Structures are given as C-alpha cells and as structure tokens.
Image 1 (cartoon, one colour):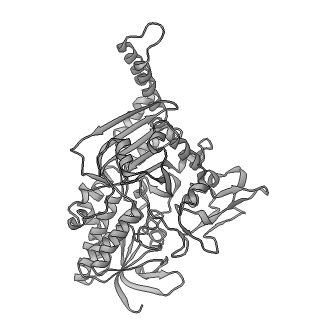
Image 2: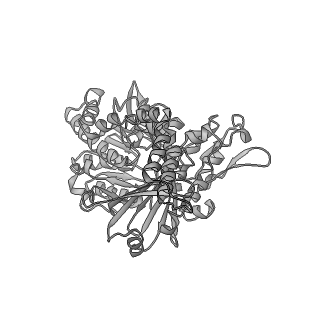
Image 3: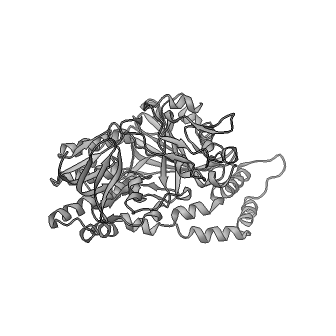
Length: 429
Length: 90
C-alpha cells in the first residue's frame, strides 16, 4: 500500500471499531488493523454493556445488535467460608439498561457494520510500532511488512497498549492499576438457564460476589447469563500476588469459587466451552498522560477508560463513546486539514462534555478506595454473615432477643475506629 | 477441573517460536514465583533445576505475568498476527 491514508485504527475492539464505523459512515478513508483472525477474536468481557450512556450514539445499531440477554435481575452476594447472603433486585425498571454479550460474536458483528460502510479491516496484522517524526505520529509499522503512513493513527490496542507508551501518552502499567479477570463460558440449554435463574427468554441476570472468592483481597466473582451459556469468573487485583504469598493460585481461586454451594448448582452439568483471561484497568486512567498528540488519539481500555464502583463495572460503554468522539474529531480535522494538537485537542473537549470524562473524574478514586478498604473483602462480609447466622439460628438454650443481637453486632462494628476510617474513605465512591 | 482440561477447549494457532522469554539472570526463581501463582493458564513452572520455565502455547494473552513480575524478568509481547488464542466466545 502506497501513499498516505486518512486514518489508521490499531485494534479491533469496541473502541477501534466504533471509531472506524463513525469514520466510514462519514466517507473518510479508514484502515483498521487487527492482530487476531477477525475483530473480536482476541477480546474478552465479563460481562455486560450498559446501554443508556451510549443509546444516542449510533442509535441505528443497537436495535439489531447481537446481545445475549437483557439484564433484569441484579444479584449481589457476600461470601464467607461456609455462608453467604444474597440480595436480588428484580425490576422491570432496569430491564433494558444493560445487556450481556460475548465479544467474539459482538465485535465481529460491529466489524461487519464497519465494512458495510466502506471501512477496510485487515485481520492477522500486528502493529509493532509507530512512525514518529519530529513529535508527530505519522503512521504505523506492521510486523514483517512495510510501514503504513496516515494523517491520524487511532490507538485502540487495549489495556496493555504498547503503542500508547511508545507515543508517550501513557506511563508504564503497574500491578496496582490493574486486575486480572478469568472466565469460563459454560454451555447450558436456554430453557435450563431460564429455569435455574427463574428467567423468561432473553431476560438475564448479573450476579456479583464479594468476600471469600478472592480470599479476602480486592476483587470478586461474577456470573452473567447469556442466551445458552453462562459467563462465570473471578477478578483479582495483581497487587494481591506481588505483595503477599498467601492468596491461592489464580486457577485454584476460580475452581474454589465454582465449587461453592452458591455457584455449583447453577452450572452443574454444563460443559466448559472456553477459558479466557484478560486484564482490567482499575484506576489505570491515572496512568494516562494525554489523550491526544500530533496525529494521534488514544481510546478505550488503552486510555484507561473503565470504572468499577463495586456494584457496577463498566468499560465497553466508554470504549464505544470514545470511538464515536474520536470519529467526530477526525471529521473536523479532515475538514480543517489540520491533524495537529490544535484540532485534535477537541477530542478531550468532547469527552469532557460527555459522560466519559465526567464519570472518569467523578469516580476517579473509586478503584483506589475499593482497593484500600481491604475489610470489604474479609471482615465486613464475615461480620454481616455472623449477624444473620445469629438472627436465623435457634439454639438449644434460650434465644437472645433480636434487638440485643442487633446491638451486639452494631457495637462490634461501630466501637471500632477502623470502621470510621473506612466509612470516611467510602464517602469518595 | 484442571486448567489443562480447560485450555484444550480453546482454539490456538501455535507459532514455532515463543512470544514469552524469561531472563534467568533477573528472575529470583523459587524466592518469588509470582508468575507461577498468577498465570491464569498455569503456564509457569519451577523446574527441578531451580529455573522457571513457561509453556507459551497455552497463553491466553492477558499479559498478567508481564505486568506483575517484580523483577521485570519476563519479556512478553503479543504473538504475531493471526497466531495465539482465537476466542470464539470472548
């Protein structure tokens, strides 16, 4: 390929594909390079997509998107060694706000939309570096091949983003800014899933687990129902391993989680169809120095656009929105024929005016807070579960008055300086 | 279920040469073992000769080992285009 292309997008995830879709739709020449067999083949989610933030972005897409199930039940479980407490929120009011999905199918579908708009996608191409000249990014280097030149390079190569570091947009990733997610996709007949989770066709459940899953350190378990599979896994901060030797090996943690009474009956008899792992940015936005440079934009996970407030875990909505705004900015740059930071700085302005940076700044300390309040993963779940055990248990001798049990545990919780310190931190969520 | 039994469910296109190398000079071996404990695919092993080795063919490409090695002894990059794990669910 000779000459200079308008835009090269590196990475066929939701950020890169959304950018390419927006650009192709506007008739701008765009080439997307994907290292896998097709966009989606290297991508993993937990997971689900929250649709409200992005419903007005590419509204024509979401009606026909290959979602798995529409989440109607939110479950949250606290786990101790041999007991658990589960909260279920079931409401028609949240039905439709989030959908479970599988990335291989979903991203492939979006890539077909890009191609239908005239965008060019070349799979099995690994980008090994950027072409840099006098502080400008002028293109990319493809492994074993020629250099490709473009007016703009869109970096959407995921959480590890070797290119963002090369571009000088991001600092090196450290273990306390990421968590590892490990997931099994388990096949079960659609009717069986409906029965086990008390769902109708296409309705889904999102279930998060906290406590003993990660043996008391930052992280948790998750279960999402898909059409005829269940996504089951754990997330754990890397710091747990670099700082201590007490946590079990990652594969063991997942097996322990799977074999729990709260989990095993839900997946019993199901066949494991796939085993995957992926890093998740947890406060990694703090590593991002700049979102743009001369001839370059940074998107999605590569930019650290992900949020975990404990109860909701988001990333894909940010990825899609950042792709959309990148395409809007490139349209403007093309119009002005200016690909310098003078025009590309609009990207940050657009993001600032949208939910992307508003949420990122608003919740910028969430991960750090969740990380630092370590009793969330051990002491507090245990205390809550001991309380409920005493409430429900009828002993051989006389039973304590409920009010007295309540007071006893309240005292345990609130006559403890650490609780106040933790509450003070949790205010930031 | 063992992790090997899970890995065989995945589709891998294996390249002849490894995309992961361990710098045995920097590696603290049995003193550390973070990679052995943290790799979701259980690919790292402490051998009888006291060295850590890695079976790259089952790599899930999460990059966890690379980020977490306290001694920066692991050199890790994405496999070449078209190689490595190809997720069919994701």
